[in-house]
Image 1 (cartoon, rainbow, N blue to C red):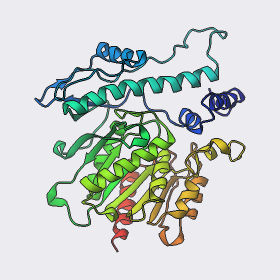
Image 2: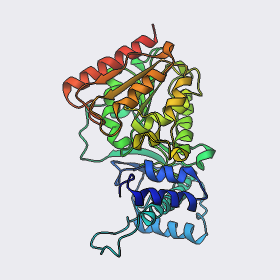
Image 3: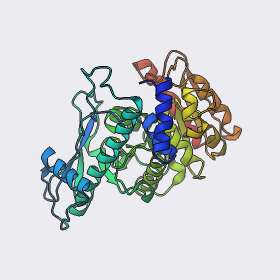
Image 4: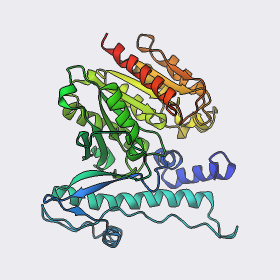
Length: 388
């Protein structure tokens, strides 16, 4: 189903009306596409070092309790049953006749409902994990090609979420430099990733950034992505980045906001511009393939402005930190005009040299040894300029 076709547009308006005219419901359905299956897992470790195995039957049982209104079973602190996240089955359409195929409205409504159900299941499990003192260990998909890294530098955590996002836990990976390499000017990059990816897929670039730029790198999954709780939603992403920022400020950046650098790739430019427009002491921001606003990616017409999300073009005008924009000239998903407009909208005193990558598109800017080297060189120059 194409979001630009008449049936899809009609379905969006129907979903908007059915949700009580809640823009966020339509925006999340249209904008967010968490990868399925996820490219990583957080192994759940009990206080005595035992790894809790996945148990789909236990998860289904907890899910039925939620659906029937019984709520989560009460647990004594320090004890836990295994009830990991379920992967709810997608609607089957293969082999259906034309009459049996679901309408765009039915597909969108079903997707929104599945996300809500999954959120309830995840909340049951996460609340029990917190009560039992469960910790986490990163387990990556074996298809990923990983650069050399220090396993002891990786910290897998779930940060208690903001009340605005129903307190959903936020899955976060921190790659810390060893203490011997940390100085008073060591930067902490908070990386807000693109749409159809997660922190597992981002792990290789996280390692490369940390080791090449000599900085701590914090990558997190938005609500409803990967091991994070909640549902994908514009407002939830704002709450997510605020929570991760506060944690990084206290636990990673030694309470120095000037050492924190926001990095937003594609949809990640939304939460980054939001935070940078509010926090005046942030050290800098890098926008990688950003867009001016969500609906402007689909159409320059403002006919659907009532459903627009992530008004980056308005927020970037109010940032109080140096900003670097990176955009591929051949980008067919988010036209380079978005990157150019974002660059021009940055206050002149904070506008830094952009990088318009001549032979790259939306997702391939760092592909190839030569381009990766140039990418790191330009980031290094931007970071160095922050201390001058």
